[in-house]
Image (cartoon, rainbow over all chains, first blue to last red):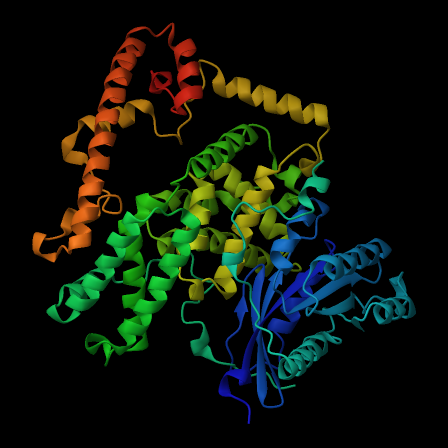
Amino acid sequence: MAMPSNKNKNAKLVLLGDVGAGKSSLVLRFVKGQFIEFQESTIGAAFFSQTVSVNDESVKFEIWDTAGQERYHSLAPMYYRGAAAAIIVYDLTNPASFTRAKKWVQELQAQGNANTIMALAGNKADMLEARKVTEEEAKTYAQENGLFFMETSAKTALNVNDIFYEIAKKLVQAQTVAPNPSGMILMDRPADQAPPRTSSCCA
Amino acid sequence: MLIVDADPHRSPSRVSPMEPSPSSSLDFTDFLTRMRHPASADLFRFTNRFIVSFSLCRTNAENGSSKIQEFLAKIETIIREHPLWVHASDAEIENALEGLEKYVMLKLFNRVFAASPEDAEADLRISKKILLLQHFVKPDHLDLPGNFQIEASWLNAAKELKKINAFRSPYEKLQCIMACCHAISNMLLEVSKSANSSPVGADVFLPILIYATIKANPPQLHSNLKFIQLFRRQSKLVSEIEFYLTSMISTELFIINIDARSLSMEETEFQKSMESAKLAIDGPSSEPIAEVETYKDIISTMHCDKEIILDEGKYPFMETEAEDLTLSEVQDLLCSYKQLVKRYTKLSNTLHKLSSHEFQLLNSPVEHLICSDSLDKKGKIEPSVQKQ
């Protein structure tokens, strides 16, 4: 029988993606979703929390939004450090945002925690007439890189809850194999430590 | 899909994002009253013993942090089993723990806050850089969208952040950061609600936070952030609080590293802007550098006996009764006394020299720039005469 502490898991989830890809719209759709009834969620401008139940367990997502502008790129390691999951969002009407998303995947694979569950979200799936990134292309990329992929629409709510639910399911599965404490330990990080990319970015 | 509340008790310290200025929920007076209760004499002694032993050890902020974190964890166990708190509610126990953290950190504040020359230097460096950046950095440089380029966007946040040095406990300092971030967050939520526009998220939140920090130039930013990270109870640095603290730390990092590229400026333009800002600040007609405690202030504090606040972290026996002393503490006391006498003699001599120097400076306004330059390099003390 599972211990009570295993029933509730707090999971840090970081949102990465270009400006305008719809990171915040996506998460707001999830946090404010109409399925939610009697529960405590947090809605800020850049931090959100929402609980998802998987079978008899529940996962409380603590969602960290990041600034998508290139100039803030070097700060991202402070945000994705210790994350249990990451959603990398791109706008399927904007190929540049897909290129950026692929960069994020590479960076997370190189710098991030190997246990971080990564999801790729092709957002704005309601604007199919303006599509520039095919579903096939993104799907192939996701498969090659071991991500799971969904096309989402913050506007129509297509796949929004599903993508979070899938992550929750994977977190619960991963937890039963090896307990993976979520959240980061601030003590490990000296205050003046610069992320490794800073120097190259600001050269 | 069913979405339920996992466990509302998991994050008792969570501050609602709708609270504009989270005020301290800590009832410190209640805590002190309980500590004075005869039943908590053992607790009181245990705590003070820790403070004394901490003060006697050669510690830097980093290993001091693990000592204090360990102590706070230990005392949490003691309190939970203590007769005085046995029927107490979770909130009351939490209050006691907050009280203890505050009590210990107030006692050890001077010992660990900005205690190393490196910290002081980092504080000065970032503060001086912000002072220059204030002269030319515009919201555009940080990708702040046009509709947020109004003073109302950052004014309240900057005000909250400026208060950070008015407090000496990690909790209260952290509250200043939370209030600052909530001010921005609430403003963004209001705007997206009223304009019925799509939410903006961190793409706007972070630039505003950085801009507000530049506007505020909060004193000792580096030391304050380090102090919170090292001495706030670790179990409390989670979730939303952890997010906002991380945002503040990344803001500091961004500002430290600001160069032409991070502001999308031409290198020559950036250098020119920095130079002219320097000229504007150092020029005789400019405002004095306000954030540095001036030389004159230091002198006047030292001459004024009434105003001296004793640093009980450095002088641990100030409240100790003679009969409480153990043999090893007597030895420590003697050792501390000798050290103190040496330091005092040295300080008096230096002070005497500096006083006559100050007198000269005050009486020769023309020469003060040359003199103050040399003083600045040697003593890192900004000459107050610039105020004249």
